[in-house]
Image 1 (cartoon, rainbow, N blue to C red):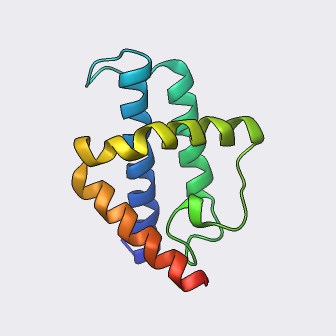
Image 2: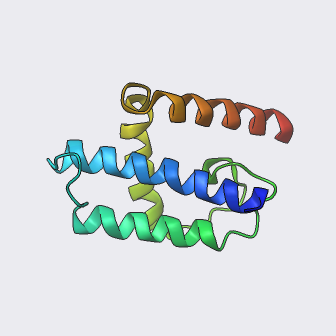
Length: 112
Protein backbone atom coordinates (compact mmCIF):
# COMPACT_ATOMS: atom_id res chain seq x y z
CA UNK A 1 0.00 0.00 0.00
CA UNK A 2 1.42 3.37 -0.99
CA UNK A 3 1.50 6.52 1.14
CA UNK A 4 -1.46 8.13 -0.62
CA UNK A 5 -3.68 5.10 0.00
CA UNK A 6 -2.58 5.04 3.65
CA UNK A 7 -3.61 8.70 4.03
CA UNK A 8 -7.02 8.01 2.50
CA UNK A 9 -7.65 5.06 4.79
CA UNK A 10 -6.56 6.99 7.88
CA UNK A 11 -8.82 9.93 7.00
CA UNK A 12 -11.71 7.54 6.38
CA UNK A 13 -11.04 5.80 9.69
CA UNK A 14 -11.14 9.09 11.62
CA UNK A 15 -14.39 10.14 9.93
CA UNK A 16 -15.97 6.72 10.51
CA UNK A 17 -15.12 6.81 14.22
CA UNK A 18 -16.47 10.34 14.58
CA UNK A 19 -19.73 9.48 12.83
CA UNK A 20 -20.10 6.29 14.88
CA UNK A 21 -19.57 8.24 18.12
CA UNK A 22 -22.11 10.86 17.05
CA UNK A 23 -24.66 8.21 16.12
CA UNK A 24 -24.18 6.34 19.41
CA UNK A 25 -24.66 9.46 21.50
CA UNK A 26 -27.25 11.41 19.50
CA UNK A 27 -29.32 8.56 18.08
CA UNK A 28 -29.03 6.31 21.15
CA UNK A 29 -27.22 3.42 19.50
CA UNK A 30 -25.09 0.96 21.41
CA UNK A 31 -21.49 0.31 20.51
CA UNK A 32 -21.40 -2.44 17.92
CA UNK A 33 -24.88 -1.67 16.58
CA UNK A 34 -25.10 -0.52 12.98
CA UNK A 35 -25.36 3.17 12.23
CA UNK A 36 -28.78 4.71 11.72
CA UNK A 37 -29.72 5.28 8.04
CA UNK A 38 -28.84 9.01 8.12
CA UNK A 39 -25.40 8.44 9.66
CA UNK A 40 -24.76 5.51 7.32
CA UNK A 41 -25.54 7.73 4.32
CA UNK A 42 -23.22 10.45 5.65
CA UNK A 43 -20.42 7.93 6.17
CA UNK A 44 -20.81 6.51 2.66
CA UNK A 45 -20.84 10.01 1.21
CA UNK A 46 -17.70 11.02 3.13
CA UNK A 47 -15.89 7.86 2.09
CA UNK A 48 -16.82 8.40 -1.56
CA UNK A 49 -15.58 12.00 -1.44
CA UNK A 50 -12.32 10.90 0.17
CA UNK A 51 -11.82 8.04 -2.29
CA UNK A 52 -12.08 10.42 -5.26
CA UNK A 53 -10.23 13.39 -3.80
CA UNK A 54 -7.70 14.79 -6.29
CA UNK A 55 -6.00 16.87 -3.56
CA UNK A 56 -5.11 14.02 -1.19
CA UNK A 57 -1.38 14.39 -1.84
CA UNK A 58 -1.38 18.03 -0.73
CA UNK A 59 -3.64 17.81 2.34
CA UNK A 60 -4.22 15.71 5.41
CA UNK A 61 -7.95 16.15 6.10
CA UNK A 62 -10.94 17.65 4.35
CA UNK A 63 -11.05 20.40 6.96
CA UNK A 64 -7.62 21.55 5.70
CA UNK A 65 -8.64 21.61 2.05
CA UNK A 66 -9.16 24.86 0.19
CA UNK A 67 -11.77 23.24 -2.09
CA UNK A 68 -14.90 21.96 -0.37
CA UNK A 69 -16.50 19.29 -2.52
CA UNK A 70 -19.34 18.32 -0.16
CA UNK A 71 -22.89 19.28 -1.12
CA UNK A 72 -24.15 22.04 1.21
CA UNK A 73 -26.51 19.78 3.19
CA UNK A 74 -23.87 17.08 3.64
CA UNK A 75 -21.30 19.70 4.56
CA UNK A 76 -23.56 20.98 7.32
CA UNK A 77 -24.17 17.41 8.53
CA UNK A 78 -20.47 16.59 8.71
CA UNK A 79 -19.80 19.90 10.50
CA UNK A 80 -22.40 18.99 13.10
CA UNK A 81 -20.78 15.59 13.59
CA UNK A 82 -17.29 17.09 13.86
CA UNK A 83 -18.36 19.75 16.34
CA UNK A 84 -19.93 17.13 18.56
CA UNK A 85 -17.45 14.27 18.18
CA UNK A 86 -14.19 16.20 17.93
CA UNK A 87 -13.80 17.06 21.62
CA UNK A 88 -15.13 13.65 22.70
CA UNK A 89 -12.61 11.77 20.58
CA UNK A 90 -10.02 12.41 23.29
CA UNK A 91 -12.08 10.24 25.65
CA UNK A 92 -13.07 7.50 23.23
CA UNK A 93 -10.14 7.35 20.78
CA UNK A 94 -7.27 9.34 22.35
CA UNK A 95 -4.47 8.22 20.01
CA UNK A 96 -6.54 8.89 16.91
CA UNK A 97 -7.56 12.30 18.28
CA UNK A 98 -4.00 13.33 19.10
CA UNK A 99 -2.76 12.13 15.71
CA UNK A 100 -5.51 14.15 14.01
CA UNK A 101 -4.66 17.35 15.92
CA UNK A 102 -0.92 17.01 15.26
CA UNK A 103 -1.44 16.42 11.54
CA UNK A 104 -3.89 19.32 11.28
CA UNK A 105 -1.49 21.72 13.01
CA UNK A 106 1.38 20.69 10.72
CA UNK A 107 -0.84 21.16 7.67
CA UNK A 108 -1.94 24.64 8.76
CA UNK A 109 1.69 25.68 9.30
CA UNK A 110 2.58 24.48 5.79
CA UNK A 111 -0.23 26.56 4.29
CA UNK A 112 0.89 29.81 5.96
